[in-house]
Length: 436
Ligand SMILES: *[C@@H]1O[C@H](CO)[C@@H](O)[C@H](O)[C@H]1NC(C)=O
Ligand SMILES: *[C@@H]1O[C@H](CO)[C@@H](O)[C@H](O)[C@H]1NC(C)=O
Ligand SMILES: *[C@@H]1O[C@H](CO)[C@@H](O)[C@H](O)[C@H]1NC(C)=O
Ligand SMILES: *[C@@H]1O[C@H](CO)[C@@H](O)[C@H](O)[C@H]1NC(C)=O
Ligand SMILES: *[C@@H]1O[C@H](CO)[C@@H](O)[C@H](O)[C@H]1NC(C)=O
Ligand SMILES: *[C@@H]1O[C@H](CO)[C@@H](O)[C@H](O)[C@H]1NC(C)=O
Ligand SMILES: *[C@@H]1O[C@H](CO)[C@@H](O)[C@H](O)[C@H]1NC(C)=O
Ligand SMILES: *[C@@H]1O[C@H](CO)[C@@H](O)[C@H](O)[C@H]1NC(C)=O
Image 1 (cartoon, rainbow, N blue to C red):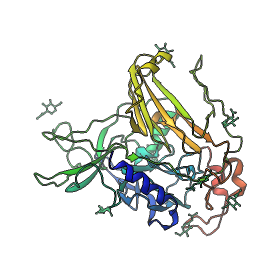
Image 2: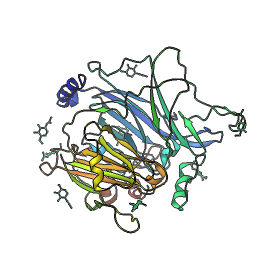
Image 3: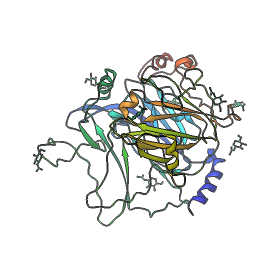
Image 4: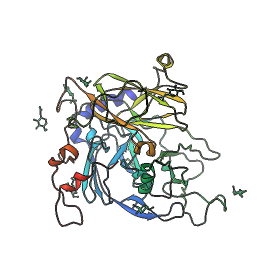
C-alpha cells in the first residue's frame, strides 16, 4: 500500500498540469508488406514497414501524439488496448466513437497516458485487420519518483503471441460473411515469426523463428500479449519460473476531462437488462448509465470455447466466476474485497463471469468480445455514461478539432487530399460507414 498513496497525490497534482507534461510524437505509415511467417507469402499489415509494429515506449503522464497515415486500400482505425482514455472516448479508435480514416488519409491521435503503468498494445480495430497484423506494444513506464513493487529487471522483452491463418483478413472476412466458421488456425506466431523446427515432418524448412538472447542468472521482464484471432494461449518457459508482476497495468486515480455526445439518434438506449427470450437479434442498442454509479455486467458463456471480453476506457473488478448459469443467488458468492482490476476477462464454456465497474468516466465506451471472429460478427455494444449534472465541456473531453465525420454527420467533414492524389476530397469518408 505504501506505493499507492503517493501515487494518488502526485497524479492529482499532475492533472492540473496537463499541458506541461512531456509529449511523445510518433509518425506512422500503415502499409501492406509481404511476409511468410508460416512459409507461405502473404500480405501483412506493417507500421513503418515493421511487423509487428514498433513498441511505443512512454512514461506515465506523457501526452502521446500519433500521426497515422492509412496506406492500406481500406479504412483504418487504431485502438489502444488497455489504455484508459480518461473521459476521452474520441481517441479510442473504435467505430462507435470515431469515424474511420479513409485510405490515403492521415489522422492524428492525441491522448494522455494517465495513472497507469505497465504493458499494453495497439491494433487496428476494424474488419478482422488484426488477423493481418498492424499491432505493436505500448510500454508505460513509471516516473522515476514513483516506485514499483519489484526490482528493476536486467532486461525488458516484449512478446506478441497469437494464432495465425495463412488466409488474409479479407478472405477471413468473406468466410464469416458467408456464415462459415474460420476453423483451426494454421499456426501460432511469436513476434510475427513462425515456429522453431522442432520436428522435421511437422514444421517445413525455411521458416524464420524468433530468438531472444538472455544471459544466465539475470532477471528479465517479459511483456506477453495475445494478439491472435480467438485462441487462448498459455505462455511458459521450460525449466524456468515466471513471476507475474502486472496484468494490464495498474490504475489508481480518476480525474476530469470533457466530451460532447454527438452520436446523435443512431443508437437506442434500450440494451436489455436480462437475456431476451427467443433467437438473437442484431440491434444498435447501447447500455445507458449514469456517471458515478456502479454497473454490474454478467457474461454468460453458453458456447464451447473460452470467450474473452474487453471494456474500453475502464478498469473493472472481476467479482465472480463459476460454472453453470448465473442467478440472483450468485451475488452471494461475489468477492467484493480484493477483486482483481482488469480491462479484459475470460468467460469459460458453460460458465459465467461477473464484473463491476465504477462509472467514473463519462463518454461512450466499447464492450466487446476479444475473439476477432465473433467481434466481426457483431458481438459488441457500448456503454453510454452520462453525467446528469455535467453536460458539454464539464465532465467529458471536447471533441478534437481534427475529428472525422461520417454517417449522419458526414457533411461536416473537411476535405483532405489523399496522399499520392492530386485532388482534395471530403467524399472519401462518406462511403466508409458500412465496413465492419
Ligand atoms: C487476400 O486474398 C485474396 C484471395 O485469397 C486476394 O484476392 C486478395 O487480394 C488478398 N488481399 C490482400 C489484402 O492481400
Ligand atoms: C524506455 O523508456 C525508459 C524511460 O525513459 C528507458 O529507461 C528505457 O531505456 C526505454 N527503453 C527502450 C527499449 O528504449
Ligand atoms: C496529416 O499529416 C500532416 C503532416 O504530417 C499534418 O500536418 C496534418 O495535421 C495531419 N492531418 C490530420 C487530420 O491529422
Ligand atoms: C514428428 O512428428 C511426427 C508426427 O506427429 C511423429 O510421428 C514423430 O515421431 C515426430 N518426430 C520426433 C523426432 O519427435
Ligand atoms: C472537475 O470538474 C468539476 C466540475 O464538474 C470542477 O469543479 C473541478 O474543478 C474539476 N477539476 C479539475 C481538476 O479540473
Ligand atoms: C439515460 O441515463 C440518463 C442519465 O442517468 C437519463 O437522464 C436518461 O433519462 C436515460 N435515458 C433513457 C432512455 O433511459
Ligand atoms: C444457457 O444454457 C442454459 C443451460 O442449457 C440455459 O438454461 C440458458 O437459457 C442458456 N442461456 C442463454 C442466454 O442462452
Ligand atoms: C466549451 O468549449 C469550447 C471549446 O473549448 C468553447 O468554445 C465553449 O465556449 C465551451 N462551452 C461552455 C459551455 O463552456
